[in-house]
Length: 232
Ligand code: SF4
Image (cartoon, rainbow, N blue to C red; front, side, top):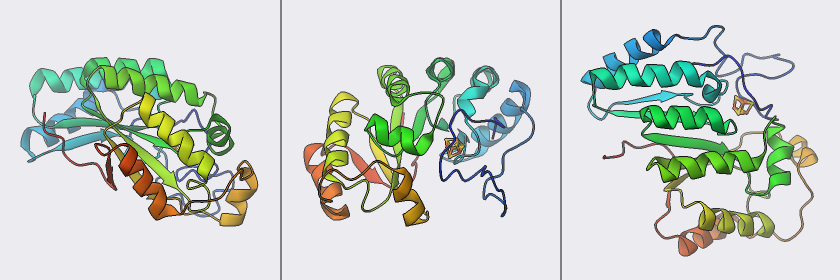
């Protein structure tokens, strides 16, 4: 973890809820690690671990790209010492300027948290200070620089498999050929969730058909559930 803050306000945020009536599973840190602190842990792990991965933002514990200056300086210190292992970021990718800095510093892989390829649906859940277009700009930049990009797709049967959502995903992957999607159960109160999301426009195709149709349209797209070590 590197950032105590986030530029989104997700309805189901797992690191900060308005009530905080129960402890969040990934409570936010209260300080900003320095580049030297980041590098010390990164070097320790990457120099020794087989297929080692370090990751900024292990899940959703605040948005790491808001600490882009510290992270990019930390990555440079790490890479001055060792070329081993993989450097990853788990991000909402809404702060494109920060993502650019981190990519340019030597990032290897990026996983982007996302719920929809439709701007209105995205905005309803993320309630962020940026737009889906910014997320797409970050992904486009990373792909252009040879970064392996996965999507952390928050998945809710009855929402994501709506025909209009599926059509938007097909268009998204045509425009942005990311390498992988990780389909993630969105563990949330269904009534509360559906109440804040846009109204359904068409039938749901079902989860199996949703995944099959994406696979048929984009056979090279890996459909999985966690980040693997990526051979360079
Ligand atoms: S992007 Fe992650 S940390 Fe930020 S509000 Fe959403 S769930 Fe929380």
